[in-house]
Amino acid sequence: MPGRKDPGPSVKDDELYESLREDGASKEKAARIANSAARTSRRSVGKRGGKAPSYEEWSVADLRQRARELDVEGRSSMRKAELVEALRSR
Image (cartoon, rainbow, N blue to C red):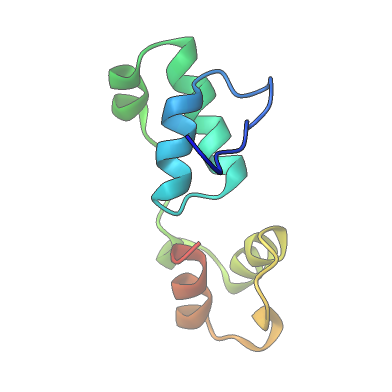
């Protein structure tokens, strides 16, 4: 496929990785999901899911920390609802 970049040797399922990237997932998230799917099966990865509470249950300090990890601009002046929206759009 022209213009397609090889994600590198650390990605175990290139096809799934590229699909996730086209859907807007970050490189890190796409690689994590693709590698997890390659380790077991795509079906079991979907079943596992996350166990984290929803962002509404997080404190503002925790939301800002997560926004910092994801390099969200303007996070220090955002209110809780704005932080939640910014994190969900990542």
